[in-house]
Amino acid sequence: MLTYIKESFDELKNHVTWPTWAEAQRLTVLVAVFSIIFSLAIWGVDTVFSKVVKAYFNWIG
Image 1 (cartoon, one colour):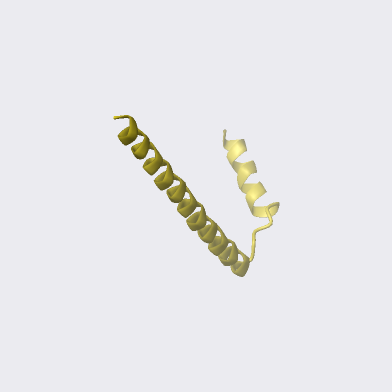
Image 2 (image 1 turned 90 degrees about the horizontal axis):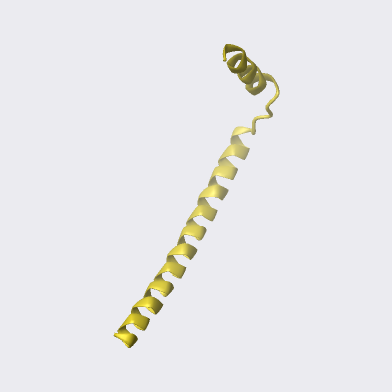
């Protein structure tokens, strides 16, 4: 287990290419924007589906 941790740390330290600070900020904003857009799309579909189901049960009941 200790060897695994040492090798993992070495991998992160010497073999991973980390993004620049500017690139990390840009990608964070991009993820936030797409998360908001996706959540609004899900909210819209959920609202429409909820109204359709409510209308259906009001119609049959």
